[in-house]
Length: 199
Image (cartoon, rainbow, N blue to C red):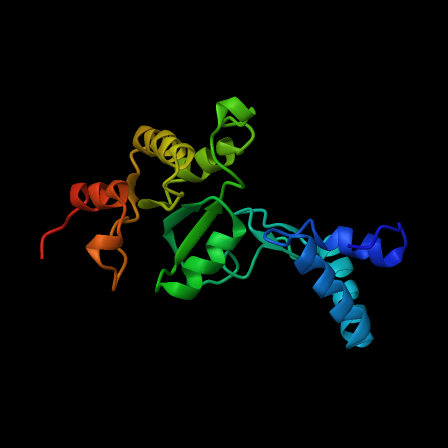
């Protein structure tokens, strides 16, 4: 790693803020951008700048968008009676690309974690409660992660749904398709057994 504090070192240091990028990866990326194709480097810088200045949150679901409403919320073909609760905007993209889900979303931007000072207010669950009160939602699908915090968040939101007489469901968790039982951890296997369904 370069020891000076010049522009190259600054670029390497900046690239390290990305998830999963260590010192060596950041160094390779920086040298690639500067040695191979300066035009791509300029385009990347412009794209980052544009996104940082223009992308905000959808007024309805809170995912990332440069418009007041995202393309999902603005799509009249989507089913407003189904609302999927996710932890991050990346989850919206993952579910939309991998499933046939045609409902709407609500992005929490995290999960309940009292030890970290993240409570219902930080997740803006009052906005979710307003949507539940609207009477438009028939089913709320909880797609939070299976961490302790994710499960606690799902439980809290399920209670909110019950108070509004809205049906809540949880996405299935368990043995992955094509997976072998020998390689599945005991916690996942236990969850799969407790959530088994009729065939």
